Amino acid sequence: MPKHGKKLRKIVEGIDRSTLQDVEAGIELVLKSTYVKFDETFDVAMKLGVDPRHADQMIRSSVSLPHGTGKVTRVLVFAKGAKEAEALEAGADYVGGDDLVDKIKDGWLEFDKTVATPDMMGVVGKIGRVLGPRNLMPNAKLGTVTMDVGNIVREIKAGKVDFRVDKAGIIHAGIGKLSFGKEKLSENLVAFIARIIQLKPSTSKGIYIRSITISSTMGPGVKLDPIAARALAK
Image 1 (cartoon, rainbow, N blue to C red):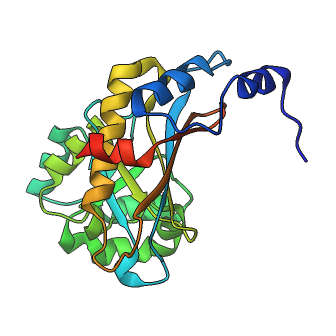
Image 2: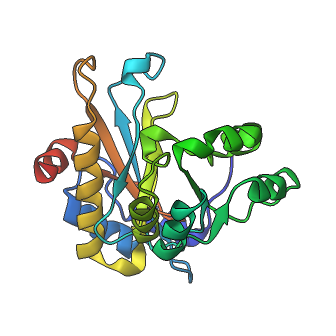
């Protein structure tokens, strides 16, 4: 069993894990629990009452956070003609077609998100085995296969977050940096929870949001009251 450092053990001892916190109190605990020198990511994990083995309960989508994620996202766009110019104007880092496919085949992967116009998906399909396992494949469900490349590039650059439920029914996401402060982190968290509520499958039975845990990159998890958080998000 791994041993935790003295600083983390001391912080964990100061958190009452039997008490479910409201959003503001929970974020305050996370902010007080930091003990490292870098700007940690603010993470959320939500356990949902869904069975991802059923296609109609597989939750996969995205959300544009009010204050972004604090990360610089490198965007690659597969497009040509007027759409290539539109993507560049919107701030895309790389735009092209077969030339980018050839670079990726040679091992180049210096980008974080991809976007493609529908007519370019035949070209992108050539590197599906490279992009797919890395969650880099453009996807219509996430809005990244679109003719509206300018808007989607701007959204990604502003802090759009993609997420999907895992096999255990849990959604994980990084939704900000601790340096944002309590107010901005609270607004990002509420926006994220509200988006999850919107995506509730009609076939999901019983309690939908079963638990919410927030934490920093290196800090301990803080459990929120899912009922209070859900009411705030609505």
